Image (cartoon, rainbow, N blue to C red; front, side, top):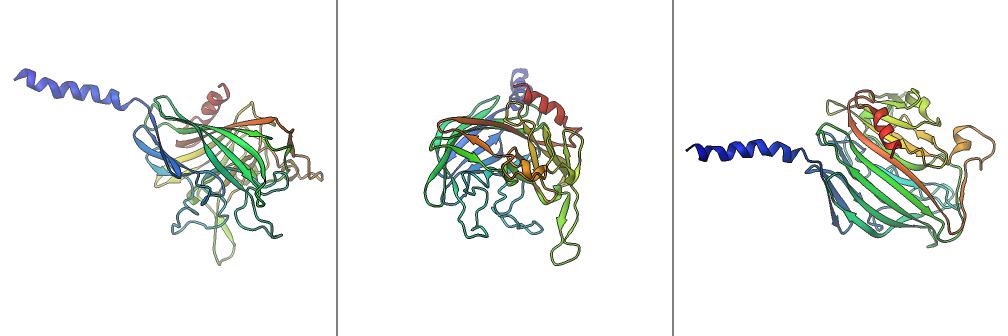
Length: 332
């Protein structure tokens, strides 16, 4: 009798230690990668070139399985704005590469058709314990079919050891001047970007009424202590968008690595919900007359590499120790 009752007791003791082990599982499907962290759905990397203007991550579920980024244009949800359909959750794009726009998805005001960032394939897909990762290659294809440049992006998924800890994505993109010299033009629309859920916005749209914008429930803060819309155009190590989602305090922090060209980067951080780390828009952000002040040239055959990390966390930036998360990232 005593031996019969020992078995479930031993199993109960062993079970928590098994659950505590962090893990990442990446499953490849025809048009996406499905990523699980610690046995829970975390995000999907969407790359079907027939449907997407550029690869993007959607949905993204933070601690507690709370959706963190705007659902539109992937889904239409009552109460969410439907502006800027090119703001697609979490993505990289730039509006001026050798004169071609890879940021917009609809025809431009002058009639030009934007280019597309076309997924070519994966060099590596690895699930794992401490992290999971993939390496993907992309072509930047202009509307006339010309390949302007290519990139190789290495994406790491870093699961928390604590169930309430931040879920992090580490993104390194190597831009290759593989088809001739590449010039990133000076423009505000570009960089690694995310569009937050409306509850995290500093201001909200007020359709059909005046004023057109009303105060929101969210907050913006950068590493220099600057808040709200004043973070726009400033240089900083990080920017955090935070507030409450589904009754819980949460935030999204985007980090610029010290190895990046022009670190610390400028921030295209809009109070209506967009945050982008953009090192290219100097004349916009500093209000300079020289419209080429921020352009960046990659000589033919050469490569420039950028690295960012984004943390989906609980609590305020202080509660989540965003400064500490950044220091850990910067030290790698």
